[in-house]
Length: 196
Length: 124
Image (tube, rainbow over all chains, first blue to last red; front, side, top):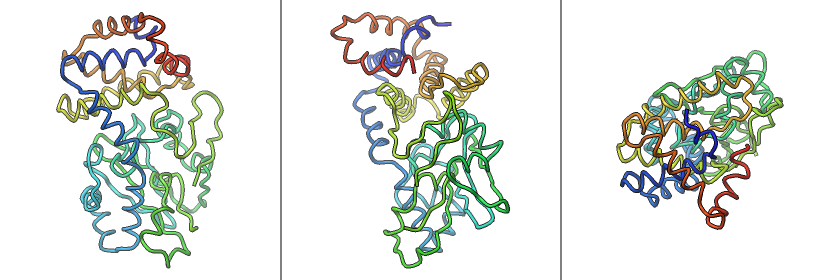
């Protein structure tokens, strides 16, 4: 269609669009800088780790989290775009949850930040639905045959967050000590949390 | 903690390291920031952008079954243009023309940008 789009690198097309929108007063580069910096520096999986550590140590909070993810997450001060309908699914010894967005890249930004490349990649998006056990194994998570794997595909509204199992041997750890054990991959469901 | 690479060779093999940067190149962060900023200012509802993104990705996947040459933010940018041209905010011709102008900048001016923009971005 557009010859320019084919021939010129996306960096120039992005710059062109930003210039046009800036000239029309529709975006402000400084405001854009702020959004970018916020997602690069502040909003990330640490937020999700704090939510999970709280749920592990406070049964009442966990109930609220499973009943209404968005509201319980907001209690800890996390909210914003892509966080309007977060549903938290709890891993159990015989039931493992993993999340994906098969159509694009929906992801709960307020608690995980922006998705990693592999989450957006066509290979992960297609294969985790078709052969989750194989994909998880390739990513380093071998699940026993009697563990059911449930794949949660984001829809237009819902963003999924996995509540991993608290590993054995962490009974003595405080909420603060648990936080650093909880990785992004565990919150997406492609890894488990392991005791230190 | 870190995940092993998917046992999957070829260009569509997912990049992997934990703690990776959100954006592989500066223009990707600008394309991201533009969409988020416009949405925040009320320029469009997020599902409108999301639908455009899904259309871009599925069209690309339908014609690239092996996944070679995948660039997520290229689709993000395309979706943003789709939304902004559909509502008349900009026209494709305007964006084309401005991008051509930028491409024609004197070498000295362009150098800094093209060294980041071209090296990886264009050829993947």
